[in-house]
Length: 313
Image (tube, rainbow, N blue to C red; front, side, top):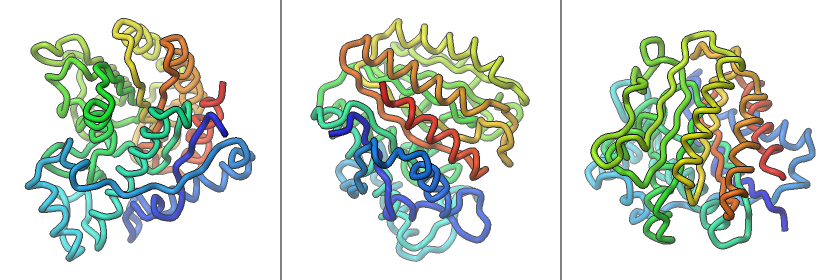
């Protein structure tokens, strides 16, 4: 059995928005065509997602928001937020498949049937406990964190984000929680949505110091990524997490139409390899990567497949 699981397929590909929206329905296929071209489907185990239950979604999201999302999903009308995230018929069910895909990957890792995993259409990091935001209807990584604690009793879970946008749904969702070790390299919020993630946001109360935000200026490239990444690794080493989540947004790669960072896919490769090695040094090997953002299809193909390639030891 392969040490690497990839959760992919038609049910996951349905999460997206039409009519020229940047988060279109072709993002999954952009990844998967290159995945097959590199022969990675012969090295990985591939599974379709399952659907997350209402009980699982409620681990992170409020009942009122879940009821609102179901109502908008039934009609397919309006927006889920202030105007970034359109409703469509079935959005609740489709987003629940995204969450379920991540929970499936988490289950396989925790039960020893996979060492590491990748879920391309996932890492919807803007969704908050009480609302949608930034193309994100449900926060799969937020649900995963709460699920890992409830089902497996984990005490220290790391969330690492190299998407160009700040992972605000995760940061504010766990800002006062010392059990979530948060590290996020992103474009400075003075220049990019959602406008958050300054260096002085380090957590609150008992969680002070468990959170690391590293904003970079527009145009920052691999030379700027390197020292920031070294800070991330030192931060993680301090807390020795029992499970590591990587949000590997491809919108931090040069050429994305919505952002202004200029990383190469080599940054995604390095992040994956270093987190893989850290997880192995910590003795558990648990690393689950998600695709996150990315709106230039060739960058999606190259960055996400670099992640998959470097999940292998």
